[in-house]
Length: 151
Image (cartoon, rainbow, N blue to C red; front, side, top):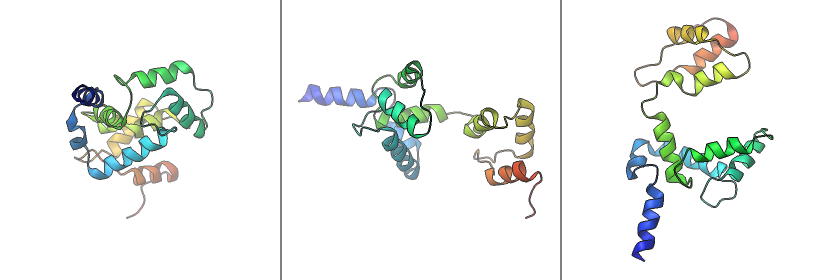
């Protein structure tokens, strides 16, 4: 039994450390667990190419190339269980500039795409606070209404 336990620990630990859960608050871990459960379409505890294809299809992306799915799965060093999934997010977020996370990506790649100059102006007008948070409601208001709302 000892070799099986050792193998299980090694598989769970691949791609990260056992301290991955200490990187996040309990509420964040729960949100990631919910996301993992949604992505793990066949509920086997591992995110596979088929799981990714199925979840992307539910979001309307029907023609995802097999190579793209393979590249996503290969970002992990082994099977993507929840611990590996959480570790991957921790690695992506560790040391990341909050301005370059999802908000900037969305504004520069979706719909009316922002130019780099527009992004520079946005961050000058709405800089993140010391914790890296941005007032996205105010940013959305200004984008949709053209001026800062009265408080």
